[in-house]
Length: 160
Image (cartoon, rainbow, N blue to C red):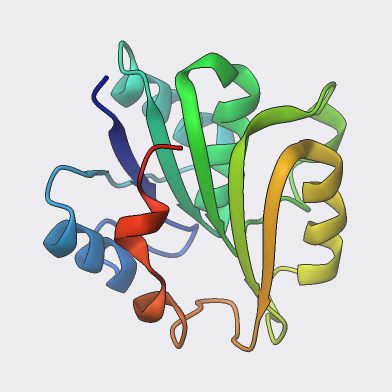
């Protein structure tokens, strides 16, 4: 089955941000869109874009990580893997929405120097949310600018 790669940018970013540009160049098949507005408006657009698509591998950065996790809560059977980069799981009541652990593989990278999203609060929420969590604390800040280009993206985006 064909996988569908999706990148979801953060609150202050766009489809033209550094991560999006990297993915567009390295993985031209990846779906990369712009999201604006509040969480529900962004989620409505994401649902529209992904309608009818399965075997989803969602990469979410910051607020985009929250969106990817929220989509996985709603559509677990369609999501094959989550890759979360400093995900903002500690806002918008996400933790209260989790009624059962999700079982797709989840790889999470979070900088210990992040001053935007608390990495330790997110780790606790992630451990309570994802049954197959691979969590990495890294020596970086919120944008993960130092480690992002060094991550093994071809491997990470494989189906497993």
